[in-house]
Image 1: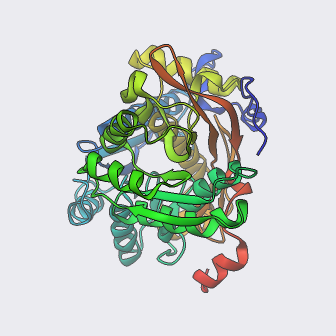
Image 2: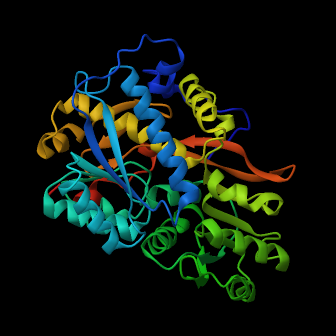
Image 3: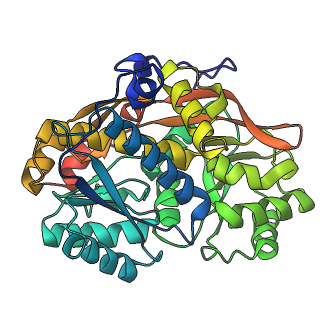
Length: 410
C-alpha cells in the first residue's frame, strides 16, 4: 500500500461541498418551519464518552446547519433525540423501544459496542423499523445476522483489518501475536486477521492470543504472555483505557522494540491523545489525521466544529457529521417517514460528504465510508500519524459472492 507524507486531499469531498461548506460561504438562511423529523439516537454516552460526546456534538452541529439552510423534506427541521444505551444489549433495546413508542421518532440510529448494535438490529428487524448503525463494527451486523431494516455506515472489522494487512505487504514477520478485547468486536477482528494476514504475508502463523475483558485488561499479565511467546509482530485491537494501560506496560517491558505492530483504531484522536508522550512510534494504524485532510469541505467542517466546541475534532466528530449528511440525503430522497420507503431509498444511496462520496451498498447494507491508514509518530509530547493514505471503503468490502452466501435473501 503506497503512502505519502503530504497532506491528503479527498477528491470526492469537492463534489457537492457538504453542509459544513454551505454554512461558511454565506448562504442566505431559509430556516425550516414545518413539523420536525425526529430521529432517535442511542449511544454509550456515559461509558464511551471520549468517542460518543464529540460524535453527538458534531451531529447537532450538522443538524443545526441543515436546519438553517431549510431543513429536509421540503422545509422540515431535523431533530435528534439523544439517549444513553447503557452499554448493554438489554438497556439498549429498552431505550430503542422507548424512543419509538414514547418519543415517536421516525427511526433509530447509533450505538457503539458491537454486541449492543447486534441487539438493536434484531429489535429493529422485529419491529420492522429502520436502524442506521453508525459505530458498531462487527461484521455480523451486515453479514450473518444482517436484516432488511439494519444498515451500517462505518467500515466494519473486515474492512479495517484488510486495510492494515494490505499495508503490511512486503514485511517479513512470520510469528504473530494477537491481543483483542473479549467481546464481539475483538473476536470478529481477530478472526478476520487470521484469515487475511496470510494473503499479505505467506507463511504467517499465530503463536499467541490474548483476549482480556473489555475495560478490565490486566496489562502486566497480557504483556507478559505476549513477551513469553516471542512473536515477530503483534496485531492489537485494544482501545480506550485498555490501550493506554497496554501501551504503558508494553513500553516499560520493551514489548514493542523491533516488532511490527498493526493496531486497529489507534490513530484515532480519542485513543491517541490519552497516550501523550508514551505513544509508540512506527505502529501501522487506522485513524483520523484531521489536520492533514485538505479537502475544502472538510476544512470548513473542522473550522465550524472548532469554533463551536473550542476543541479539535475526533473520529467520533467526523462520524457524527457524516451520519447527519447521509441521513438528510436519505430523507430528501425518500420524502417519506415510512420504514419501507426509507429502506428502499437507502439501497445504493450515494451521498456527498466531507470525506467524499459515500454509498450505502444495497447488497449488504454496508456503507463505503473509508478511513485513513498510516504510521504512528511522536511529535513533541503528542502522538500523530505520518505516511497517511485514505482508503475508500469500496476498495476493501466483502466480495459479493461471500455476501450472497451469508445473506441469501439480500
